[in-house]
Length: 213
Image (cartoon, rainbow, N blue to C red; front, side, top):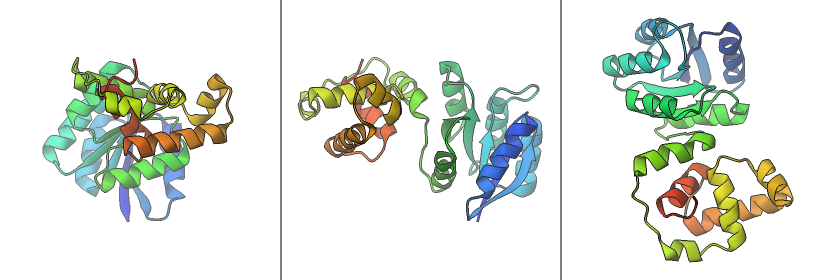
């Protein structure tokens, strides 16, 4: 059973997340905190497997709470969950020790998958912020790999660029006047050619090899 602690300063958000997670077998919400200070207290009390941490809170914010929890409980897994995709929030959350970063509008299935995956050691970063994060990590070091580039058709590169920008298949289909099924097939082909299994990994390779702007 995965034990989850939810930290958010809004009652409706805490309750909503609790309801969503409670529908998943194998997940149990063991506590809910309204601020960072309470999150630290409940982490010590319940020893949760994962903490969903809002970042922008009054008093002890999520960044500070994440740092405090990681210092006292190094094995704690913290998944930053916020409405903000601004650079400073992303970088501060990761520096503080967050194991992943999702936006609050993440679909139910995506949230549950992220909780389960994070506990098992995987890293989940919302596609809309993945590009910013990895571009920052990579700095100005971009390796222009012609082998990787030549393996993709012009249409695949176009789709990869939109994918790296965080657009879902439905939006990519609208922008390129394609059916969602066609886009899905293109994305699958891109994953195969790049040797990856998800959108974040594809975005990382695209950025590191200069395949997108």
